[in-house]
Length: 283
Image (cartoon, rainbow, N blue to C red; front, top):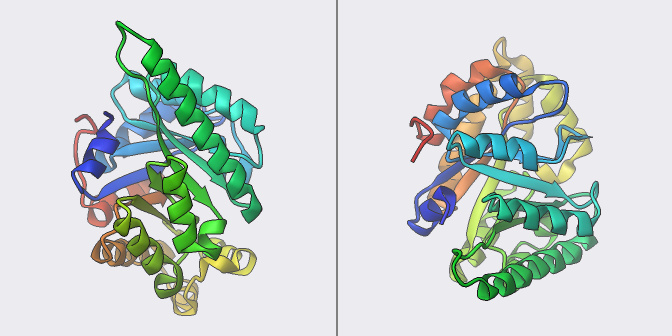
C-alpha cells in the first residue's frame, strides 16, 4: 500500500502537487525542486500534459522520485496519448513499483467512457497477473479518474468511477461549490469514494483572466479576479484564495487537494499554511 492510499484509507487530508518535467529542464534541476516540494505534500504528480502542452512520458521522472523515496503519481491524458499506449505504460510502471496513477479526459466529456474502460482493463489485467504469481507480492494500481464529465454530471460520474474500479476521483478545477463540488463530495462519501480537488496557485492577473475567459466551467469568482487585478501583490491574493478553497473543501470532508503549481519556487515556503503539511517528504 502506498503512502498516498494509506493516508486516504486513514481519512487523512492529503495534498498532491504537480511538478512539470520536460527535456529542457534536466534531471538535476527537476529533482532539486522535487526534494523541496516533497516536504509540503504527500505525493508529486508528474504528467504527460501540463500548462497546455504535452510533456514527456511520466514513467522516467516518476522512477527518479521513487528512487529517493518521494512518492509519485503518474498522470496520463487520453486526448494526447493512445489509450492502448497508456494501458501499456501503466502496466510497465506497476512492474517498476509505480502504482499511483491519474487518468484524465478534459477536452471532450464523452471520453469519460474511454477512461472508465481503461481503468477497468488495467484493474482486470493486474488482478489476473496477481493471481498468477506465486512467490511475488501482488502488484496492483491505485487509479484516480478526472474528466470534464464530472463537471457536467458530478454525482453520476462518481458512481460510474466506483463501478469501474477507480480508487479516487480528481475532477477538473472548478469553484462552483454548491453546484458541483458539494454534490460530488457528498455522493462520493456515500459510496466510500475518495475525492481530491484541484486548485491552481494563481500568481498573476493574466493567468486568472485567461482561465476565466477560456475555461468558464471553472466558475472563478469575479470578486477574486477584481482582487488580483487591483492588488500590488497578486501572488498574495492567489495564495489566500487557495488557502480559503482548501479550508472549504476540508469542511465538506473532501479527501484532499491537488495543487497546480506556478513556475515560481518562491511559493513553496507558503505551502505549509495551505496544506498543513511540513515534513521531510519521507514516511
